[in-house]
Amino acid sequence: MKLADRMSRLGTESAFDVLARARNLEAQGRDIVHLQIGEPDFDTPRHIIDAGADALRNGFTHYGPALGLPQLRDAIAEYVSRTRGIDVGRDRVCVSPGGKPIMSWTIEALCQEGDEVIIPNPSYPIYESMANFSGATVVPLPILEERAFTFDPQDLRERLSPKTKLVVLNSPANPTGGFFGKESIEQIADVLRGHDCYILSDEIYSRMIYGGEHYSIASEPGMLDRTVILDGFSKTYAMTGWRLGYGVFPAELIPHIERLAVNYVSCTNAATQVAGVAALTGPQDDVEAMVVEFEKRRNLIVDGLNALPGITCQKPLGAFYVFPNVSKLGVTSKQLADRLLDEAGVAVLAGTAFGEYGEGYLRLSYANSIPNIEKALERIGTVARELAG
Ligand code: PLP
Image 1 (cartoon, rainbow, N blue to C red):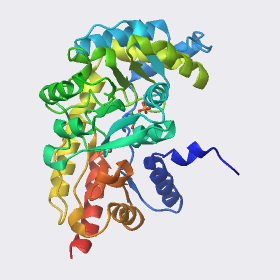
Image 2: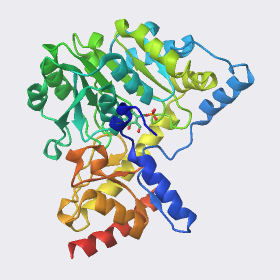
Image 3: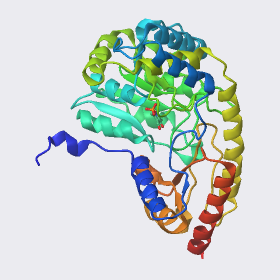
C-alpha cells in the first residue's frame, strides 16, 4: 500500500492505545485501574438525557445546518458572551461533533507549508498532529513545572516570527492541569498584540477550576477577532460519547469553517444538539457537584503521590489531571507507564505522549472513584518503592 505522504505526519492520541491495551489485559482476567482516560466517570445529567431522547422521538432525526441548529448556536453565543464578558452572536458559532474538529478545521483553514504554529509542549497531542498534517512547522513552547505548568510569556515572544500563523493556548490544560489566570492572560495578550497571527484558545476545561476564575484571551482588547474559542460539552456535562462541541470564530473565518464542516460531517447529530441546549440552559447543579467531587479526588491523589518515594506532584488548579514528576525513579516515563500497566495494573500515560517536554512525568486522570484512586496509589507505591530501592 502506498499512502499519501502526509499520512506519515499524522500523529495519534495514545490514550486510546493504552485503553485498548488495558482492555486486552482485562479480557485476560487482570484487574486494571483506569487513570489514563480523559473523561468524567459521571453519567450525563438526567435532564440532558431526557432532552436528547425526546428530541429523537420528536423528529430530530434529519440533516440540519452545517454550522448547527439555530437554537443551539444562540444558546452557545449567549453562554460564551456571559462567561467571557464579550458580545458574540450566533453568526460566529460553529457546532461540531466534539470539540476536536474545531482544532482540525481551524488548523486546516489557516495553516500550510511555510507557516509556523506555536504549540505548548506538553499539550493535547492533536494540535501538533494536525499542524504537522497541514504541512506547517510546529514550534514547541515549553510548559514549565517551576511555573506551575504554564509558560513564560518571554518564551512565547522569542518564538514569534513573521511566519507565525497560529498560537495555541489551553487553560486549564491537558495534561498538566496548568491554569493561566487573568494576569497571565493579559501578559500573553500584550505579547501577541503586536503580531499578526490567530490564536486557538482551547477552553474545554473552563468549568473545571479549583479556586480560580477562568479568563479567556478573547476577553482582552483587540483579541476577539483573532481568537478561536474551542469549548464543548464532553467534559463539563459528562457527554464525551455524545460528541458535541463548538468553536466561536472570528466572523471572517466562519464561511470557510462552514465549508470544512460540510465536507467532513455535513452536520452534527441533531438530537445531540437539542440535548446541548438543555445542558446550557438547564440547571447546573450536576456540574457544580462534579467539580466539588473532582477537587476531593485531586487532593487525595496529590497527597498520595507526594507520600511515595521518588515522586513529587504539584496541586493543579484545573481540569482533572495530575502530572507528577517521576524523574528520580531512574526509568523513562514510557518505561514507567508500561510497567505500571503490565505489572501493577494501573493504566496511566507517559508525559511524552504529550510532547518531548513531558519526559520525566506521568499523566494521571483522577476522573475515577476514590476507592479506585486509593487502589491505584497503593499499586503505584509498590512499583515506586522497588525502583527507588
Ligand atoms: N481539548 C482538550 C485539551 C482535550 O483534552 C480534549 C479531550 O480530551 C478535547 C479538546 C476534545 O474534546 P472532545 O471529546 O469534545 O472532542
